[in-house]
Length: 211
Figure 1 (cartoon, rainbow, N blue to C red):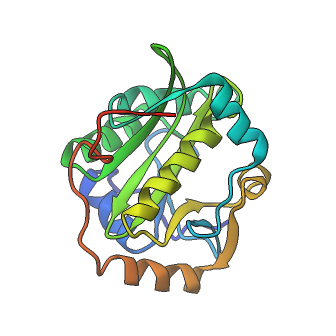
Figure 2: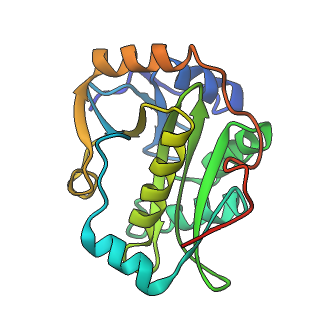
Figure 3: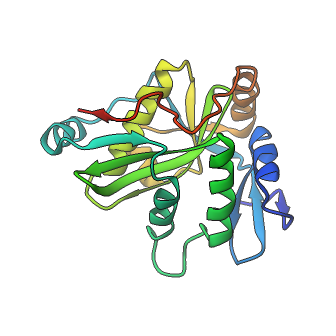
């Protein structure tokens, strides 16, 4: 995957402007953001997503509590620690920038709790009627899948068409993601940006959701 740009300032304004063009930042090394708009895009079409029976059974068994936007920085920190040591692209400057975007009301997190312990979640940017997912993590099995499932159910009710997952990998594909071309994604994005954006620090409109 080749970057469309290298360097520049990782400011909230630049990240939001890039998101509107289908571009997202990654880091290969500190101080050098790389900006990507891949030829193949990984997305979840909300009407096609079906949680597995095992995930539904796990949700009933463990009775996880789900929240939105209650621990954004902590979700990012856990996502940063999700890979092998030294391999994360979620560097401190990335966390700082996205926390500022969260304060602006465009970046949101989904948290999964086992009692008072954060055990899974994800974060991303919502613009118009599209949610652009950035990363997810699990401390307990199935918790990131549960976060994704509940996010998709929520944005479906809001009239969203899809959730952008950026780059395909076997894990995302096993959850029901689709691969589309860049041009197809940019068309979806342009249409989604015609809708008003949700701007605020409580993406759900509810404090908690418990199954």
